[in-house]
Length: 265
Image 1 (cartoon, rainbow, N blue to C red):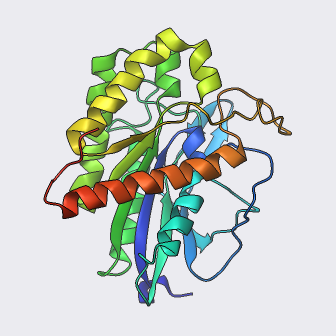
Image 2 (cartoon, helix red, strand yellow):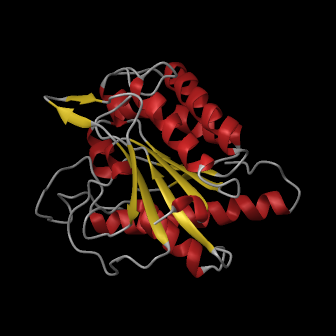
């Protein structure tokens, strides 16, 4: 397929493992290849607890198939199509730059760090394929790694703000949506999580983004999946979270259409 002949609405997806999709268990609605939804991926291997990210990034594109990979960007994209937002003759491309077990203080997402450079190379490639390609949404979920390392509020605020402003410099002023941590893990690490969550909320408020609630979304352990853990949303939860991200996206767009540049959060 010659992707330079396709016009893509781009969903930028980034963050750590809950963005990458670490949920297990069944979902109600599989997403199988349909000629509409595609995913861009970049090279990189996780070896002995560290990411090896060769630069420049080797990039590939394939049709999205939830039997291979599922994350909240899929249910977000499905809602985007259901609401009739995908114009005739266009397709959706998830630029998937998420990497599990990554954080700012671990040396991944600051401007000089390899995951951040890789992310920008992938976004550049997606936009360069066709001058009519456009980013329509920025979906971010990260912070557990930094919380576990006792990062303070101001440090996380500055790091996240710099990253998202850097992406917007390329993508334009498009809606940004993020969400809270998995409630089970957050409750067990409340003191560590609080400053990071406050920082994320502040960044969303400053940039006119939205922060989705996740208090009722079960973990892999709570959903009794085949890979039980407490920090990751189950696959069922990821499907719901993508719909919540899309509802927040719609609210932001409505607010902008009513003459308000940013939605207060």
